Amino acid sequence: MGLLTNPTAVTKRMTHAVDSMVGHPDIRLARLFGPEHGIRGEAQDMVSTDALKDRSTGLDVVSLYGKTFASLTPKETDLAGLKTLIFDIQDIGSRYYTYAATLALAMQACGRAGVRVLVLDRPNPINGVQVEGGGLEPGLENFCALYPIPQRHGMTVGELARLYQSAFGVVCDLDVVPCEGWSREVAFDGTDLPWVMPSPNMPTLDTAWVYPGMCLLEGTNISEGRGTTRPFELFGAPFVDGLVLAELLMTLELPGVIYRPCNFQPTFHKWANEICGGMQLHVQDRHTFQAYRTGLAVLWALFRLWPEQSMWRTKAYEFRDDVPAIDLLTGTAGVREAIDAGADFSEVIDAAFTNTDAFNAHRENALIYI
Image 1 (cartoon, rainbow, N blue to C red):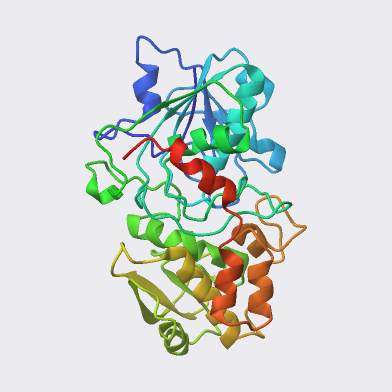
Image 2 (cartoon, rainbow, N blue to C red):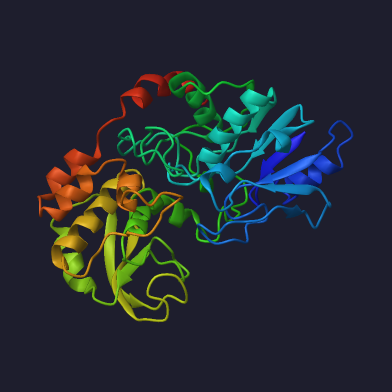
């Protein structure tokens, strides 16, 4: 067997899947596969990782996050000799988060190689009920959005794997081992599982809750709080006045969230070592909070207040440099065009919540949990 995993694959006693399987009499673990951030979770976002040997076991590790898009898919030689590829990674419920895309590409490769895929499922930490966002226009496919599923999809990775087969034509021999005792409305802190950071900038469940909206700032020159202890909850830039921004956002009357104007100084990433004005999002009611709508509101307000200084990212983003990063994140050029045109927020929303027909038609049949 091969194991595609990262630091989140632990038991309640914090035994890692690699260590559990290496010592198991019925499993011959032959090879490890590491997604973005590496098998031990040490690499920052969009930093390629190299093939290596696992320090704990001496097993070869195949990197599935190199310097090219081709590096994201296992090669035929990587899968040679394997009967089964096991996937065990804690997802966070947002389509930008690349682990589910790694699973999809691995499923495609395994289908071609005749290797079975076994997904060891884990809960959606921000629950499996709330769905929010838009799909994906043809031509905007990328590692943060391989298929037209919403920014907050309300599914587990096991359910997504089933959806990839039923809605998007991914062919492989697939089995999913379901979670025991989890129901869709339960968030991660309603389980007895330990929270292990799925990536270096996903330190808490609070981070995961805002991420489906606040990840949009990766498509701009606004700091999304990387280099602070509260990434994606904190955001801003040196030219932002948090008080003015909060006043405008409050006119939209978005539910479940309050805004705290503040200053912060990132230690790395955007605006490193510069004092940024901005704010922190505080989610007061998870059941009414709409993460994606809130993220769109933040974009709209920033570009309306500081149009000369707020800028869209023009550098390559997740292996594509031919279209703006924000279009890859929203799945449409319409959001960016509406914001640039000074449109009302309602027009931005109209542009954002489209193209989910395939997801809507197939989601229910892909679900495992009630």
